Amino acid sequence: MVNSVSAEWERIPSSNVEQQRIIAAIDLGTNSLHMVVVRIDPRLPSFTIIGKEKETVRLGNRDPQTRNLKPEVIERAIATLGRFKEVAKALKVESIIAVATSAVREAPNGRGFIAEVRRRVGLNVDLISGQEEARRIYLGVLSGMEFEERPHVIVDIGGGSTELILCDAREERVLSSTKVGAVRLSKEFITTDPISQSEFDYLQAYTRGKLERTIEEIQGNIRDDEEICLVGTSGTIETLAAIIAREKLGSSPSSLNGYEFSFSELKEWVKRLRKMNYSERTDIPGIPESRAEVILGGAVVLQEVMSLLSIDKIRVCERALREGVIVNWMLSHGLIDNRLRYQSNVKKRNILKAVQKYQVNIEQSERVAKFALTIFDQTQHILHNWGEEAREFLWTAAILHNCGYYINHSSHHKHSYYLIRHSELLGYNETEIEIIANLARYHRKSPPKKKHDNYNNLVEKEHRELVEQLSPILRLATALDRRQIGAVARIGCEYFSNKEELHLKLVPSSPNEDCALELWSLEYSKDIFEREFKVKVISHLQPTSFTLS
Image 1 (cartoon, helix red, strand yellow):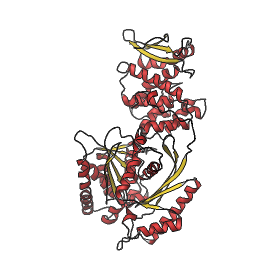
Image 2 (cartoon, rainbow, N blue to C red):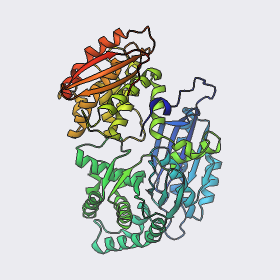
Image 3 (cartoon, rainbow, N blue to C red):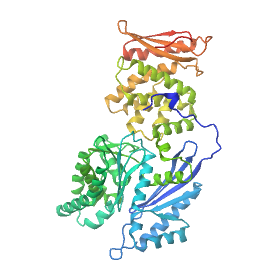
């Protein structure tokens, strides 16, 4: 959590000597071929995804007798890789890193396929082991999610294998790859449609048996005093999250990053999916035709993982192997000193990216954030009872509250909402981004109203109350830097319960500064705060020598 604004905030580098670099990562998976194209800013260090491509090729659909990759599948894969290369070329990538996983790893002609890709497409493909695949998945998740000093188990259900990683922000403790995947299980164990009871029972028992040893190893590396968090990545888990969210919320979130669902919700969907045939599964919104064929097998893997670990909920991370390939490349090219620096603060790093992108005046934003947190801290348990998470939302909104100037000065608070809402603030989930965007939206002009669409996007009553109470704090903080020159150096709050008054003590930055415009702006902005908290706000200008208690 953010405890000190100026002390913790990294200054934006003024030099642009290190130019941004564009690279692509391709994952030749058992079910699909994926490519992600990113722009790397070596100064942060961080990357922004600027392009994605996907094609369902089914490398895992191998010859049942020889186990070789089929000729027609090889042709589809080569054609797809050729198209990917042209897309990458159009985006001016300097390097393409391609990796192949279990399907190519296990095929007797897998290395011949890689040689053919090199000859016909001019693309070098690295064949990586199951453990190396797990390590790079770990790096990908590390780039997109804060671990908050807690151990995590990452589960990545692919077409041919499932990677399970026990890790924290410092290191990976267990890296494993087990030969149970959505395509493999569906192809080898499901012949009936809908699946028969006997086939389902065998599928479940086989999957559990294959996972048990790995789960035991993970549990043996968890201390008794540690509470683990489960993180899920890749297509099967993202699809399950999408259909659960759609049923619960009425629509799928625009981003699944950070979305959580429960073990009971998963079990309910496994029950439903096993009773459906292929056609009925394709009718479910959120399940593509290619995924409908294999979704039950993947869902059973996740169900057994959660059951064996006795974990009740799972959080989705939209970054995995492909992003891990990018991070690994950055590490090998000296763009990241070490993985700890990369993980040091996922949220702050992505806020900094937004600050740069929208040309935010960071000095002014830091002052507003400092004032907002001071008011928050000194009125906590007096006027409000919000905790550290709400404090962090307030800080983030304060840093980004003026980003709307990037679009237009007029109605910039509304533009700020839009930009924050559609920024890739990794580390925050969809709901948290909505809260932050609303806080920034209401730093000026009208307070939250039921007729506002953005306010109605806050489904939970608690989230609406948070915005109603914290946005007036941000209003006061913004008023305290009305001229954006740092006229007010420090503030203090004192509450008089017998009078229901909150006294704001302002210490100017210099003896000659009268802060007249800031005092006027406070008077103009305080009414919403007064109505919300049922207090009268009284401002006092103190001498520069005044010591705040």
